[in-house]
Amino acid sequence: MSFRGLLDTGSSVEHAESRSLASTFQAGLGLGLVLLLFSLPLSASAAPITYTVNGASSVSITVFKGVTILGSAFGTLTGSITLDNDAQTVDAISLTTSPNIQLVLSQSYGGYDQVTIDSASLTSDVGFGELAPPSTVGNAYQALSGGLSVQGAWSATDSSNTNPSQSGVPIGFAVQSVTSVIDESLFTVTINQVTINSLAGNAFGETENLTVVASYLLSTSSPAPIPEPGTALLTGFGLVLMAASGRYHRPRS
Image: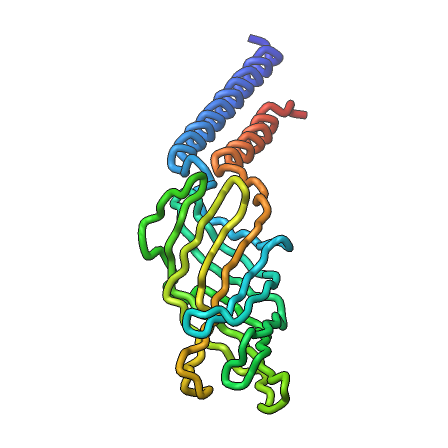
């Protein structure tokens, strides 16, 4: 065989080995991809999602003397709520009322007839979680969860100027549980009848306690879609496979 023939034969063997190596490499990548995809969850939607409440969210605050309503007012909300819609659980709550919500009382309490909620933040505590299995309510689900706490401040004035004003009195109140009704189709959450503060009547010369109750209507926006893990990895491995294939098939100079 001539020297030229030997060179051609060597080149053919080299190209065959290169093609074989490329095929082996691609097969290995493909097998790894299949095994990894089988080990992944089928969907990313099972993870809890934190929703930011938008400007359409509101809070209704009502003041009771015993069981008698003395006044009510409305405010807006900021904050967020974390939901796991697959498990139908509320995983975290952080809601703050708009500042200086004023209530004019129909009758004075302890000599005060005007109350202002300077601020009130309802926040889930460490260990917050589900207290009972969820239930279905029409197109929504209902979740009982706890515990939480309220931090904030309140003020009070006497329109007759008989009593000195109370200003910036701290609120630190424990909330054992809340019941949330979540409508996924409307992106709304309702949390009704949450006691956010209570004052002992005897401290104000009254026989009945003063209770402040809040009801929350949360409006949230649809979250941005999250690609499934399998889809993202499939795209990534496809790009790697294309790059590797191009490398092994690049003509030699």
